[in-house]
Amino acid sequence: MTTLRLILGDQLDAGHGWYRAPRADVVHVLMEIRQETDYVLHHAQKILAIFAAMRAFARELRDRGHRVHYLAIDDPRNTQSLTHNLDWLIVRHRAARFEYQAPDEWRLDEQLRRHVEGLAIPGRMVDSGHFLSARDTAARLFEGRRQWLMEHFYRHQRQRHGLLLTASGQPLGGRWNYDAENRKAWPGQPAEPEDTRARHDHGALWRTIVAAGVRSFGEPAEGQLAWPLDRREALTQLEAFIDAGLPHFGDYQDAMSARAWRLFHSLLSFALNVKLLNPREVVTRAEQACHEGRVPLAAAEGFIRQILGWREYVRGVYWARMPGYEHSNVFGHTRPLPAWFWTGETRMRCLAHAIGQSLAQAYAHHIQRLMVIGNFALLAGLDPMAVHRWYLGVYIDAFEWVELPNTLGMSQYADGGLLATKPYVSSAAYIHRMSDYCKGCHYDRKARTDERACPFNALYWDFFARHADRLAGNPRLGLVYRQLGQMRAEDRRALGIRAEQLLNSLDAL
Ligand code: FAD
Ligand code: SF4
Image 1 (tube, rainbow, N blue to C red):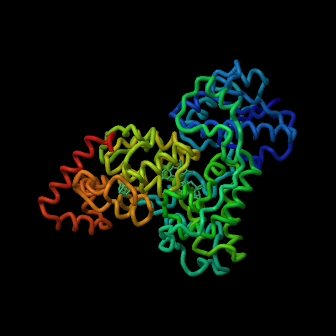
Image 2: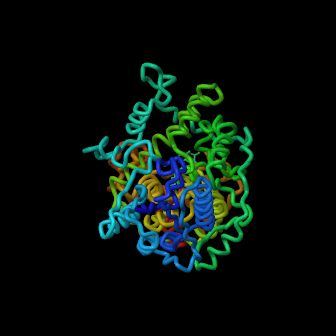
Image 3: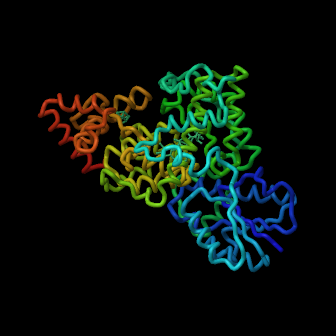
């Protein structure tokens, strides 16, 4: 009585209950399939890192005595479809039962649920055991509310998991949230931590992927792939971050610089999202470092909030709103992405840096994603579905359950304000305050309407003027609309004309 167990490419958790002891009656299946490489155009490093991590995981399971059937992308028996492969693998292994771990993406959840209904053998889904809340925790907590405030969810999570609390259950240090202390610009010191991640040469695998006809974009980083591909490397990266990044994470969480690509961010999202690391061990490690006096409370709290709060919260939003959430577009924006989203070649220095780095590294940190690229996309009225597909393809950590609410909800406000209390947009003033991008830029950050004026400025005012019917009543935007109301009519007109010129020539900026 053989059981066939499916392991998806983002389910590489060697600590899962499935692997407690090897069993002769269980075959584990992993597959590299075009279905998964092709549902969106992916960054080369993302395809490479996932396949390489899957191969390492299969090796580890075999070494521990488990039976594994690994279907490589160039295996002639590979139909490149998840369900067609499952059908013949069930016959091939004479499986009497089929099991899979709960997928994180609605697309795969639905595909597997339907397939199991039609199977001639019993099939069942088991928990992946990965998250710190259930798929529906947020939906239950926010039932009946129009706005889903992350802070409310986060406090609930802190109490539930007993993190950074005093013996009487109060927040350590007397406050739940030290966000206000996490907004410093980076003056160039302390130095960005050295990038000590191991480099991998996966040239042979890359050639196999290309020969199989998989299309991609971005740098494959041949010989230099730096993402942790197994648990040992992921743990090493976690320790390196706790030592060198976390102490300054709080202070410079929102900072950006052309001289530093990741500042004090952890680079752990890939390892977390493919389940090489468990969020519980990551937040526990940060809390421990705080108790040991190695990192300030504000830094530990800021970091724990991202994982215990934001990461779990956006997953809750995803499961509450899918399917259909991906079509959100309250502003009715339809402009295609400018060509430089695929090259990084624009005279806007902030965007050239953030997009150029995304194409080179498959990584940009949160504020680059939100306040440079996403900010521009929203101000320019780019089609949110096209923006979503770009983010889903480009980042090493992009899986729909986490990418979609961040892109459509938080960054593009396309859901009308479920996650964000106001659109995350700014003029050049914010980018200048938080970065060194503006110095040396072709555009003038202070100018609004002349030819060299920073495009963010006119687009910012034009955005609020265009969407006044939807946004003017938002109490958090009172100041913006008061300023707009006090502007002279000719200044408003000039801003409108400049914005129109910009919108008609996005490719040339
Ligand atoms: P750090 O800054 O060191 O943060 C630590 C961890 O906290 C991250 O590894 C991540 O697991 C978690 N985290 C932080 N912020 C968020 C958040 N807003 N939502 C969920 N988890 C968070 N994150 C993804 O994992 N995948 C995505 O596809 C993704 N797309 C994004 C798209 C947009 C438009 C925006 C604004 C954010 C997106 N994020 C996404 C969230 C965040 O930008 C990344 O998690 C982070 O940049 C990863 O780098 P890091 O590991 O160095 O993170
Ligand atoms: Fe970006 Fe404008 Fe600053 Fe240039 S001047 S870096 S375009 S914000």
